[in-house]
Image 1 (cartoon, one colour):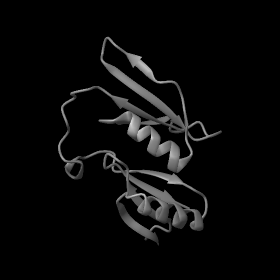
Image 2 (cartoon, one colour; image 1 turned 45 degrees about the vertical axis):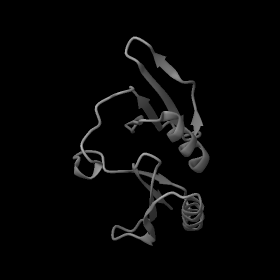
Image 3 (spheres, helix red, strand yellow; image 1 turned 180 degrees about the vertical axis):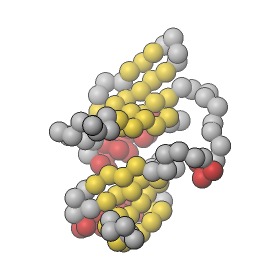
Image 4 (cartoon, one colour; image 1 turned 90 degrees about the vertical axis):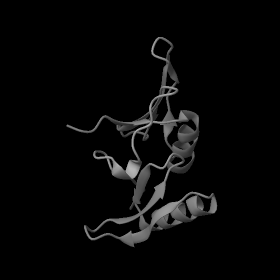
Length: 128
């Protein structure tokens, strides 16, 4: 078994697509459009790994409660494989104006990680 994909509803899937492709080097499939449901999506992929992120949008969808008060998915974690890569990407994201939610550190459970908020406020851990 494995996780096939994680889906994120987004206000602006183009903005999120650009973010994940630029900073995490993800590939992107063709945009899917379902005019009947007024639904669009992209699947982003991690190279040879089969795990994907699906970015989805339905315009004028009712916004959920504040992200901090929701139960359920808390964050996604993307492994870069090396501490120095975590440090380097964290600094690039900071320089580019993104909110660094957690500075690079070794967590209590042994991960070397930092965290950034993507353009729509999703909490993304960057791990070694």
